[in-house]
Amino acid sequence: MLNRKMIVSMMAVSGMMLASQNAQAAIVFTGTDLDLLNVGGLDATSHFEGASGYIYEAIADSDANQFAAIGVQDAAGFAGFARGLDSGAFGALSTGSTIRVSAWFMSNPNDPITNVGGEDGMRFELLNTLEGDGLPGSPDLIFATPLSPVTTAPISTTGWTQKSLTLELNAVTHDLANLQEIRPVIVQSGGPGATGELFVDNLYVEVFSNLATANSTALPGSVPGGFDVPVAIDLGGDINGDGFVGIDDLNIILGQWNVQAPPPVAGPLISDFGSFALTGTYVDWDAGVFTSGANDFRVEATNLGGGFLDFASPLDASGATVLEITVDINAANLADEFNVVLIDGDGTERVIRFTDVTIGDDQTLQVALADFLQDNAPGSVAGLDVSDIRTFHIQGTFADNDLLDITFDNLQFLSTTVLEGDVNNDGFIGIDDLNAVLGTWNNGTPPTPASTVPEPATLALLSMGGLAVLRRRSA
Image (spheres, rainbow, N blue to C red):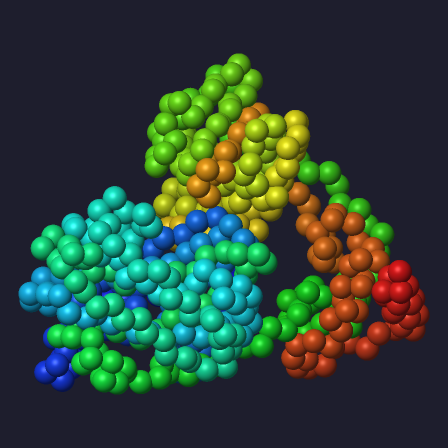
């Protein structure tokens, strides 16, 4: 879905363990490390996410332990999942019946949770219909418990911690006569400085005849399998991609010293938005959101949504490396980001996010195609085929009531010349690139056979580069 700070594999698996507890507990449903986010004895898992929140399943390197990861990258982000369960699976529920959810949690050691005590944790939602969509604020909601935080104290980054939440039912508050679905929810959402990933594994949902029995019954399940999450190593100076920052990378820099890349070359135009009309819209964006002008296209939306255009024939942007858009961020705008989604012939849906937008007219914004947010649908062939673009979307307003008011004027591909030694991607080989190599010098695993020995001139320049680093740091 996104660039990850750990090595993981996306998985899609199925199956569900159904186990009987002691006679005092009606049924135990589990979402184990084989199927935490997938269909099974519990109804289909529902994912929800917004702004910079995301959720995915991962497999750890060492012992194939599979788990869910919920991530947030800024204060506006939120993400989570819900496992809807048909209340009829328990038989008759009455006042005093008690439900319990438990799961194991851990903070990603390479991307730890930073909003400790913030909006993350577990809750129950009771619904009067078989909903299964997992979206917050369902119109069919009977009752929702307050969020029970997972990170009331710093959550471990080295081992799993089991947390639980219990709810005693009653006929009045919980409308047992009309109760159709019980939905345990696990969520993480943003707060001041919020970032990080919360790992979740081995979810259990139990029903007991009464609260006393629930309180006296040990939590089920064992600690999830271990794993070896690699320690993040900064290889920003590894220009030649051999896993080691050393003399070979330095020689690339020095061999291109003071080289300036040529200007970008304009690629295929996606749209100039003149007298523009979308093929379709979705969620809360409809015809009233748009104003189509002779040369531009204005979107004014107060809730999330999007629109798309299907091209009459495929767009060939072979060689393109950058997506560029010209916009007016109008004075009423409160949103700080929007998406452009590109879809190729085999169905890959690549989300490219323009962030940190500020009010002002005639702005030219660029995002490298390699710096995409996520692939919503990977397609049958990995990666986006820029030679076969079939559809594009505009999406925005990822937080409620954040007015998005943007006028789009031009959207096109660009082809740029990438210099091998341009570590910071500014189109010029100079002191900043040299410092990137020197700042990560000797990081990684040296290749075999040993790299070449620098010549005297190279050593002299290396000394000059070291002095440059010192000057920049003292500055």
